[in-house]
Image 1: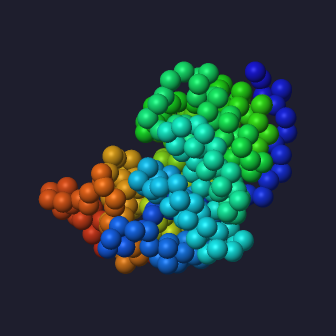
Image 2: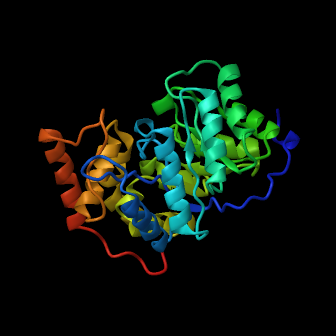
Length: 314
């Protein structure tokens, strides 16, 4: 199917161009969700210039949250942001029916968009994965972003398959591309001809992704360093290559923490070290320990000790 057969992308209520945090889920000492901190945390990142918030993804430890807990997170964020920025929860489940039910409940709770994931655990051929995603896209009229992360979820939505989905579902308006291959952004842009907004979902590929025409960043380290994340995005977007390169070089050791299996533990540890959050995670995750924690602490301390002044108007 060629791009010429695609319908014009419908107008939607979300500006996908900018930094949208994949927000972490904070826990208290009993590992219950700390809704007070969650609300403050979201507002703090919006104050730094972020465009919206994406709860219930991998970084949000969604697989460890019950249906009711995930919905409560959405409600807290909707109240906290109060129309200031969109709440775009991830929709992921073992069963398609559960994903559909959560999509509808999130819409009723005030979500302004959805991030649609393939099913947890089960991954197979395009016919089945397309049917799952289509069911979620059809569940509400909300604008949706497809999440492609074959590294984490095995399912790989190829550019040609994304074109097919976009042709059949007008409310599919964006894609979070996390294949780690920046060439995917180029291929999607060529095939989709502006039909979808393209966002990078891998922290240490953001500058390269913007150069390849991505317009947004679903970011992880933003949870600890929102001002730096927004500045890096804007410098790269605005073509301020020398300043972007300098900030990127400083930031990369931290951004690379987003690309390893224990990225949740690592990002929450950075939050703790900057004084905005704690390192608590829910099992089966455990907080970092031993040499693993010592090495992470070394990387974080070195970065914070050389934290740069940010360029004017970034």
